[in-house]
Length: 280
Ligand code: NDP
Image (cartoon, rainbow, N blue to C red; front, side, top):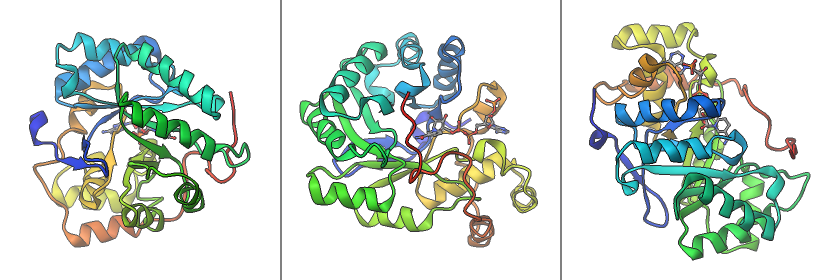
């Protein structure tokens, strides 16, 4: 098992450092979250991805506290929920996140969805700029933003998001948006990196896995790492939590990489950010 120190760090556009491999907590029930996050921290993960929408920030905070690790050694991300897309509402929602996490700062805070039909992501971003200025989030960014949404932020606001967290996996390679992010100094984070398991039975993934003598999940996660994206696979299964952490003692060839990228078929597992306007 690699140690936490073997996980590469990515430097964000404001100088903050983020471990390239983390642990996702979407769809982990609050009652199961503390144990799952503690298991991940014990395995060596030092980056946890949560969100107001997941309803488990409090339990993530409890796990970080119970781990005995200094707070500064764990990178914690949370995200603003869709019902707080206005300046004051966003600031108040951020305060609740810190309260739930039991911390006086969060490492990264994201606007979870652009909600173009609601139409207030520019105003919401100005609240994120204020949060960034206050120092209570070490970095701020966005999630599910398309090129047009980012272009509007560039034109109408000052702070460039540190990350854009978007759906990426071999069935949705997102090369245009990833290149746009990179051209503007925005790090891409790949959510649902194994498409919630849907890519693992693909015959091409299987063939590459046999070639490098690794599991399909390790091969797909390694593909993300070699593309330079940040990933945080989710699992409540201890053996998988360990499996997903062992990505740094093998390499994919350029041919393996190309075969996996060629699986792209523009297939989403989650909502389309251009039409998703759900507010709780
Ligand atoms: P993932 O692509 O990480 O897949 C998780 C699923 O795959 C679970 O069902 C898990 O099962 C299974 N799994 C995990 N590891 C393995 C393995 N080694 N072999 C076989 N099956 C495996 O999906 P997520 O949607 O959870 O995405 C990861 C994270 O990204 C989220 O947890 C969340 O933090 C973030 N996210 C962000 C979104 C956004 O809008 N910003 C949207 C969606 C996700 P089991 O748990 O039963 O072991």
